Amino acid sequence: MIKWSITALKLLAVASGLLVAAACSEQKSVEEPIRPVRVMTVNFENAMATSSYSGEVKVRHELSLSFQVQGKIAKRLVDVGTVVKPGQLLATLDPPDYLDNESSAVAQLNAAQAELNQARKDLFHTNNLFEKDLTSKASVERRQDALQAAEARFAQAQAALALSARKTSYAKLIAEHSGVIASVEAEPGQVVGAGQTIVRLAITNEKEVVINVPENHLDEIKTADEIKVSLWAKPGVFYWAKVREISPAVDALIRTFTVKVSILKPSDAVRMGMTATVYVTRKEPHSAALVPLTAVTQQGQQAMVWLYDPSTQTVRPQPVTLEGYEDVNAKIRNGVKTGDRVVTAGVHKLLAGEKVRLLEEDKP
Image (tube, rainbow, N blue to C red):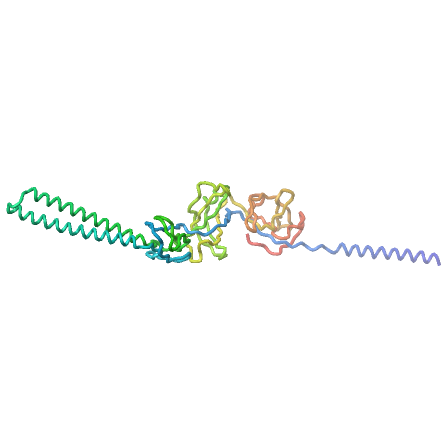
């Protein structure tokens, strides 16, 4: 009875060993799934570097309008934001003093005209007497001198009247250009001097964006291949522009250079005071390859990408030198060549020599 139990136990152990071996063979037969990846083909070209700067829309010309004579403002016909046209009346001075001066000048001109007429008659009468030998040559010459003096006084009176009339017209502030009133600096009833600013007129036919550029970015502004402007209020809409002026000196407070960028064909949507972004684009001096940021990994201080080998369907790490970053892309200077296929997704779990399968291939 004991011998049968030992035999049974041996048979049971052999059977258990066979079951364990079968289970191990089944586990070895199960293969791990192949990791899916997405790749793109590398293409080197002269990349375009784009920098952006925030600024404010301003007009190129803003005029300070003032009276050419002093006086008290009688009325002001415009306010901030008023759109004006050439020849439009903006403000007037209290005119009585200038009207009185003009009336006095008219009276002086009339008196000079009467004196001139009398001098001409006297000379005519004296010439008749001289022809009849009833007066002397000296008398004729005195009448000629008197006529010349009368003519001079008449010319002087004419000039005085013209000056007085101009001063009277100076009591009216007239717009010489079309534009928008940007600010008002005087009110009716205020006594102002000649040349004192009454209103400021912004001429809106030329608009520009004023930006501040660090000194280490001045070269890219000067060598830009294209410049575009976008409004914060109108995202996605771009206007071509060009650099009009670069300040020759740095700002003492913020240590940047003021750059004025003219908008070439501004629409009515571009208004003064709007927030704008200036995009400056220029070609890089050497070629670079653009790859998504998701394709770049870091090993210590070394940037790396994963290259896909279509012959073996495996991947391997490749150190690269980066030129910089642009939006969602990294710019590779060297380390890869045109035609290489770089993994763009799933790089964080890859192993050297690991076999992979392609999900989808991105365009270069």
